[in-house]
Length: 471
Image 1 (cartoon, rainbow, N blue to C red):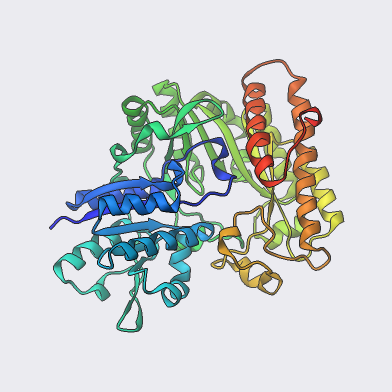
Image 2: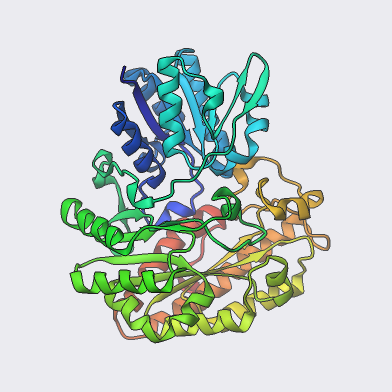
């Protein structure tokens, strides 16, 4: 019998991620595709994008009365996700509540021990196949212990089944793009309709602060160039998507496949833009084909720089040098591609002098967009175990990169916060002056719009006003 299933995002907001656009929940698009293919009735309810309150979520659940509520969460949104599942259980204890995502995958014991009454099942790892098998087993009375990738409590016993095998061929994944209300998703900087797409899963690097390597079992898988470009063309022509954001941890890893994607996009000659994240080393590798990036529509690249201190890069296991990071930013700037990177502050050894040097070097690196972010010891990372004795904030909802979680040995958290504000203000006051002095053009217009949005929403919400005359 078909089940009525609602797939949700939690009503969680940081005032950071969402300021430049509304992002479709790619994870739910794939879950919906597979659950619908199995015969179930599916609705995607993107409470985060809709900016719904918990009360509005409650009214939605009462109106819909689903058989199953499935929600995904990362560390900062886990509390909001649990609040939703508590609402569902209060409404009807018979509603099956399912939780997935990176944080639950690793912290399932903590969640089930503390919230077992509201979380029935946790899907660990890749969820498309596990979710279908779970719902089918609940309907047929099958043995849940035989389903890989689950955690749940059975008569007081914490049950964890075997690890789920990853989908071998990503081209076989089913996406339910038609279940999204595309009018909600847009990129504010260029005023284009926005889609989030995935061309690969996993990363073969082991950065100490990141959980993605382990989440994907240390494996890297990729979709074919043909399938990827075909999906982009479908979204462009069917739904009018003009801005695509690659959700991949590492979309450019396979140089042959990546160049083929670029060549196919150039051949299609669609009016589309792309934003992606990649490694410094790949930009250095592709220095002679960056013109293809731009011809294909790549307008914005985020580079994982993280620090201007080589000893910190080595501790983070970034496998790059400070000089390489600076060179890669320069190459992208020369190619007229928007450059974005982050500089992590606030590790236990942080000092005032180190932060001043980071700011000085960030301005010398000259990315278009620089994020001065605070070190986050997500509880499922190697970095957490390295710094846990210095953690002073335990509210997961504040683990969003601009709230002090770690207290440096030689600084107070108040001093760290003040220095973070100073880095943002100094960098962007100078960046605004730089671009206002340039002739109008794509990059200048893009950056002025970006900085206007940041001043109006990011700075105001997190750091206080940045007077117009200072800009």
